[in-house]
Image 1 (cartoon, rainbow, N blue to C red):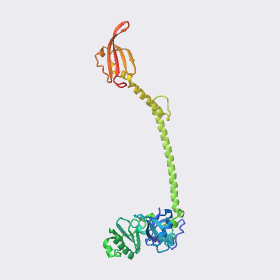
Image 2 (tube, one colour):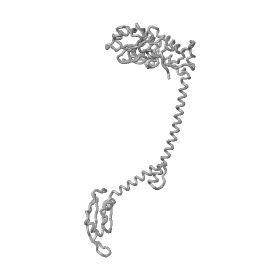
Image 3 (cartoon, helix red, strand yellow):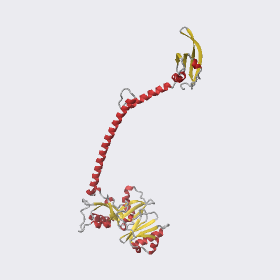
Image 4 (cartoon, one colour):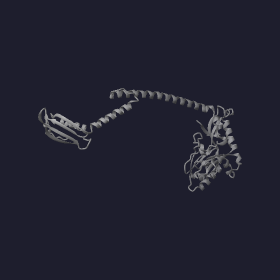
Length: 382
């Protein structure tokens, strides 16, 4: 994990003998993000150039030439984003300061991964100006990205000017070690406390990182003590993941085999017949179901349905079936000894029954029989 601190605190990393750590490329270099003094960094707003974005780094120094006191060739420029009005936010810092900060970090055995103006370490709240204290300098944050730092006497004057130009006066919060450091008229306006800035836990926005272009940190310069543990953990995680996948694959394969065997056993028990393989069971079950649906439709259609409907009507009628003639939709029954049928309510829902009595020659003698003509009211339905 990359630690965070202020560049002015790096002197604590020097040994008691006053000697620096080994070179920043050595194995003792510690990756760190640093707060740097905001009074050495200028923040400028410019309109978005009409040229392609890839050419902006070449154009920006000349667009700011009239605002910079030093020659633009001696300045390092960073595009920090866009303001609420859509203008580009440009941070300008001298190459001399950048080299000096890099030298301090090298002497402290630090591999710098980011440099951010320290006024951004202050909290930000809409409608409030926050003021912090650092060794005689006031850090002032006026917006999500805007702010400045200056010596105390200059900072109080700038704050007065800021409050006077705002249409809706913002609230003022000041954190100083002694309230008497604040001018009396500002003490009456502000919420004052003695909280100090915790540089190691302040939220650092890398959008304002000064390390860009020629100062961009090289990943190759990171100490082995930083990337070797991460690489080892990555390899270990990959090995554990592969082992887990292998075990999961074996487990699921055994589960599938067990389910296939169970499926074959259940099929053989429910549907006796030729033994089926696990891959053929689905087709075999579908064929059995189709055959069953065909049989069901046959039992509920036409003359077969009429014959089934007669089952309850003909029970215990003591009749003799002489003949049965069936076609697709109708049924004709000729019965002897049908006296009991005459006394019953011959009614089958969904069918019309017509009964006639006639004499037929049976074994050389005339015999009275009943002829039942059964026709459905609606073809194919009971």
